[in-house]
Amino acid sequence: MLIQFLEHIKKFTEFEQEDFCRVQDYFDMEMYHKKDIILSAGSKCNCNYYVLEGCLHMYFTGENGIDRTVQFAIENWWMTDNLAYQKGETTDFNIQAVENTTLLKITAGRQEKLLREFPALETYFRKIYEIAYGASLMKKKYIFDYSKEEMYYHFTKSFPQFAQRVPQYLIASFLGLTPEYVSEIRAKKRS
Image (cartoon, rainbow, N blue to C red; front, top):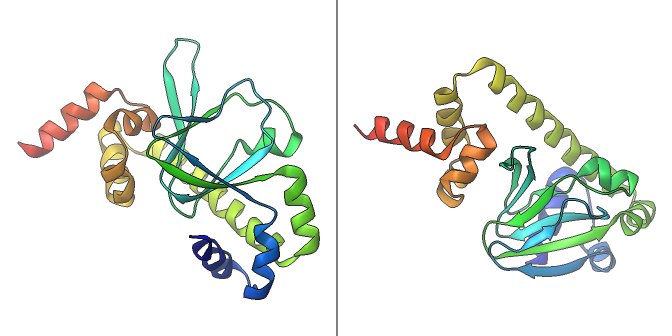
């Protein structure tokens, strides 16, 4: 399973397999069951999570008591509240397992030491963050450009791996829709 992490690193930067044994020492592997909370709003966010297997979602609970999903992560994706993680502060977000999930976890302090020992990983993390930032901008574009129905179809077409694995109510939450509206869209498509 850890070899997939090495392969992911090698997609973004040159890295020697012999160094990977030492890299592994910076991470802890953890397993979670479906619906387990990995990070709770109001707690200190001091870890970054890499998904080896499974699926996560990050969400916050609005003032109206409704949960709003802001991000998903599947295999080979990272997830954390980046601002809280970098500053060592408390988070406003929850991270929950959507499926049984196996993660690699690294603390901010260990990540800093890792990057000092292996400067090539600076490139890896920079590229990962650039991709995440770009995806965030595209989501904003879709919110402004697409109708709610177009947004749903675009998401399910662009990310079929989520459409097949993530419950519809979480997709609805991510897109700012109600589960009932998503059911209407799906029923309309079938007819």
